[in-house]
Length: 149
Image (cartoon, rainbow, N blue to C red; front, side, top):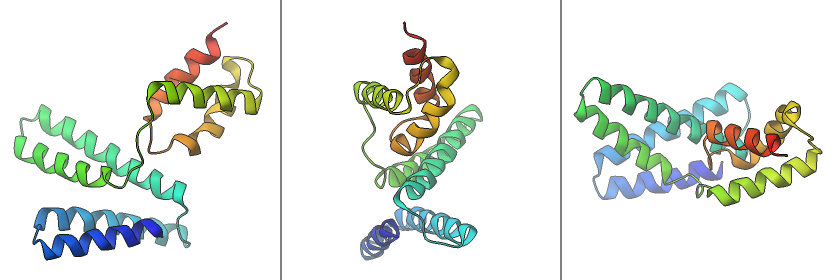
Protein backbone atom coordinates (compact mmCIF):
# COMPACT_ATOMS: atom_id res chain seq x y z
CA UNK A 1 0.00 0.00 0.00
CA UNK A 2 2.97 2.25 0.56
CA UNK A 3 3.69 2.21 -3.17
CA UNK A 4 0.23 3.52 -4.03
CA UNK A 5 0.80 6.45 -1.66
CA UNK A 6 4.05 7.27 -3.51
CA UNK A 7 2.24 7.05 -6.82
CA UNK A 8 -0.49 9.37 -5.52
CA UNK A 9 2.18 11.94 -4.64
CA UNK A 10 3.69 11.67 -8.13
CA UNK A 11 0.21 12.05 -9.63
CA UNK A 12 -0.28 15.29 -7.70
CA UNK A 13 3.13 16.55 -8.88
CA UNK A 14 2.30 15.67 -12.49
CA UNK A 15 -1.06 17.43 -12.23
CA UNK A 16 0.56 20.58 -10.85
CA UNK A 17 3.19 20.55 -13.59
CA UNK A 18 0.54 19.72 -16.22
CA UNK A 19 2.50 16.71 -17.48
CA UNK A 20 -0.28 14.82 -19.25
CA UNK A 21 1.83 11.89 -20.43
CA UNK A 22 3.32 11.30 -16.99
CA UNK A 23 -0.10 11.62 -15.41
CA UNK A 24 -1.54 9.00 -17.74
CA UNK A 25 1.34 6.59 -17.07
CA UNK A 26 1.03 7.05 -13.29
CA UNK A 27 -2.70 6.48 -13.39
CA UNK A 28 -2.12 3.29 -15.41
CA UNK A 29 0.33 2.04 -12.79
CA UNK A 30 -2.09 2.82 -9.98
CA UNK A 31 -4.97 1.11 -11.82
CA UNK A 32 -2.86 -1.99 -12.43
CA UNK A 33 -1.98 -2.20 -8.71
CA UNK A 34 -5.58 -1.58 -7.65
CA UNK A 35 -6.72 -4.39 -9.96
CA UNK A 36 -4.19 -6.71 -8.36
CA UNK A 37 -5.57 -5.78 -4.92
CA UNK A 38 -9.12 -6.47 -6.12
CA UNK A 39 -8.09 -9.82 -7.64
CA UNK A 40 -6.36 -10.94 -4.44
CA UNK A 41 -9.01 -9.37 -2.17
CA UNK A 42 -6.29 -8.04 0.12
CA UNK A 43 -3.50 -5.48 0.14
CA UNK A 44 -0.28 -6.29 -1.65
CA UNK A 45 2.91 -6.82 0.28
CA UNK A 46 6.16 -5.20 -0.90
CA UNK A 47 7.22 -8.29 -2.85
CA UNK A 48 3.90 -8.47 -4.68
CA UNK A 49 4.08 -4.76 -5.51
CA UNK A 50 7.54 -5.22 -7.03
CA UNK A 51 6.34 -8.29 -8.91
CA UNK A 52 3.44 -6.27 -10.36
CA UNK A 53 5.81 -3.49 -11.44
CA UNK A 54 8.18 -6.06 -12.93
CA UNK A 55 5.25 -7.47 -14.91
CA UNK A 56 4.41 -4.00 -16.20
CA UNK A 57 8.05 -3.42 -17.19
CA UNK A 58 8.14 -6.72 -19.04
CA UNK A 59 4.91 -5.87 -20.88
CA UNK A 60 6.29 -2.49 -21.93
CA UNK A 61 9.55 -4.07 -23.11
CA UNK A 62 7.67 -6.62 -25.20
CA UNK A 63 5.55 -3.82 -26.69
CA UNK A 64 8.68 -1.83 -27.51
CA UNK A 65 10.17 -4.84 -29.30
CA UNK A 66 7.03 -5.49 -31.36
CA UNK A 67 6.58 -1.79 -32.23
CA UNK A 68 10.20 -1.57 -33.36
CA UNK A 69 9.66 -4.52 -35.67
CA UNK A 70 6.62 -2.74 -37.10
CA UNK A 71 8.55 0.56 -37.51
CA UNK A 72 6.17 2.43 -35.21
CA UNK A 73 8.61 4.85 -33.61
CA UNK A 74 5.79 6.99 -32.19
CA UNK A 75 4.52 4.03 -30.16
CA UNK A 76 8.06 2.99 -29.23
CA UNK A 77 8.67 6.43 -27.73
CA UNK A 78 5.39 6.26 -25.77
CA UNK A 79 6.19 2.81 -24.35
CA UNK A 80 9.75 3.83 -23.46
CA UNK A 81 8.40 6.85 -21.60
CA UNK A 82 5.93 4.69 -19.65
CA UNK A 83 8.72 2.22 -18.90
CA UNK A 84 10.87 5.03 -17.49
CA UNK A 85 7.99 6.13 -15.24
CA UNK A 86 7.47 2.57 -13.95
CA UNK A 87 11.19 2.14 -13.32
CA UNK A 88 11.15 5.14 -10.96
CA UNK A 89 9.33 2.92 -8.45
CA UNK A 90 11.53 -0.13 -8.94
CA UNK A 91 14.41 -0.94 -6.62
CA UNK A 92 17.99 -0.56 -7.84
CA UNK A 93 18.88 -3.46 -10.19
CA UNK A 94 21.35 -6.04 -8.93
CA UNK A 95 24.83 -6.06 -10.40
CA UNK A 96 26.18 -9.37 -11.67
CA UNK A 97 28.43 -9.72 -8.61
CA UNK A 98 25.52 -9.04 -6.23
CA UNK A 99 23.37 -11.56 -8.08
CA UNK A 100 26.01 -14.30 -7.93
CA UNK A 101 26.56 -13.57 -4.24
CA UNK A 102 22.83 -13.79 -3.54
CA UNK A 103 22.58 -17.04 -5.51
CA UNK A 104 25.45 -18.51 -3.49
CA UNK A 105 23.73 -17.54 -0.24
CA UNK A 106 20.46 -19.14 -1.29
CA UNK A 107 22.22 -22.30 -2.47
CA UNK A 108 23.79 -22.72 0.95
CA UNK A 109 20.45 -21.90 2.68
CA UNK A 110 18.51 -24.56 0.79
CA UNK A 111 21.48 -26.97 0.76
CA UNK A 112 21.43 -27.43 -3.01
CA UNK A 113 23.89 -29.95 -4.42
CA UNK A 114 23.50 -29.69 -8.17
CA UNK A 115 21.34 -28.84 -11.15
CA UNK A 116 18.57 -31.14 -9.88
CA UNK A 117 17.97 -28.64 -7.02
CA UNK A 118 17.42 -25.69 -9.34
CA UNK A 119 13.69 -25.52 -8.53
CA UNK A 120 14.35 -25.18 -4.80
CA UNK A 121 16.96 -22.48 -5.40
CA UNK A 122 14.74 -20.50 -7.79
CA UNK A 123 11.77 -20.71 -5.41
CA UNK A 124 13.83 -19.31 -2.52
CA UNK A 125 15.58 -16.76 -4.73
CA UNK A 126 12.56 -15.32 -6.54
CA UNK A 127 11.25 -13.09 -3.71
CA UNK A 128 14.74 -11.66 -3.19
CA UNK A 129 15.34 -10.68 -6.82
CA UNK A 130 11.85 -9.73 -8.02
CA UNK A 131 12.05 -6.41 -9.78
CA UNK A 132 15.81 -6.26 -9.35
CA UNK A 133 16.91 -8.79 -11.98
CA UNK A 134 15.44 -10.41 -15.09
CA UNK A 135 14.15 -13.93 -14.49
CA UNK A 136 15.95 -15.35 -17.52
CA UNK A 137 19.28 -13.96 -16.35
CA UNK A 138 18.70 -15.26 -12.82
CA UNK A 139 17.81 -18.71 -14.14
CA UNK A 140 20.91 -18.79 -16.34
CA UNK A 141 23.19 -17.73 -13.46
CA UNK A 142 21.66 -20.33 -11.12
CA UNK A 143 22.32 -23.03 -13.74
CA UNK A 144 25.93 -21.85 -14.11
CA UNK A 145 26.56 -21.81 -10.37
CA UNK A 146 24.89 -25.18 -9.75
CA UNK A 147 26.69 -26.82 -12.69
CA UNK A 148 30.12 -25.55 -11.62
CA UNK A 149 32.21 -28.27 -9.99
